[in-house]
Amino acid sequence: MNISYPTALFRGFMRKCPQCGGGRLFEGYLTPLKSCSVCALDFEPLKADDGPAYITMGLVCVFLVPFFFIMQARYEPPLGVALVISLPLTIIVILGLLPLVKGAFMAALWKSRG
Ligand SMILES: [Zn+2]
Image (cartoon, rainbow, N blue to C red):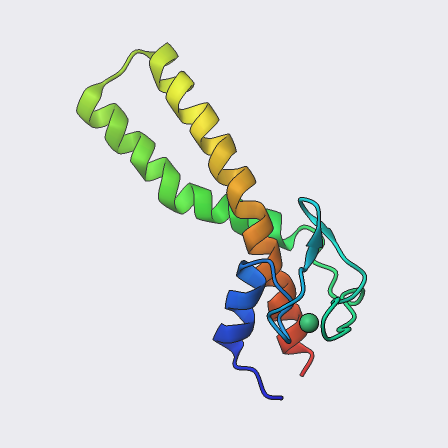
């Protein structure tokens, strides 16, 4: 079974097993399962460590920070209003993106093993 790199990344991004796309990758929010419940792919060697966190922070910096600069330049909100908007939005985006990036990262690790 030869799975393309984009397919594996997409399956991981959807928090599914990169090999079969059927089994779940995580138990809960970020804890990887030991293996796939469908195809028995071993997830133990796919140690993501801090990689997904760095990628998530990078994505947030690239896409969210310019939004805040534009908001500040166009509307010039008071500091309190800017903080009330930007801090929760940043936290929500980071927490929403992190498991998706971790899944894609683990899929990339699996695919790079050959
Ligand atoms: Zn599987």
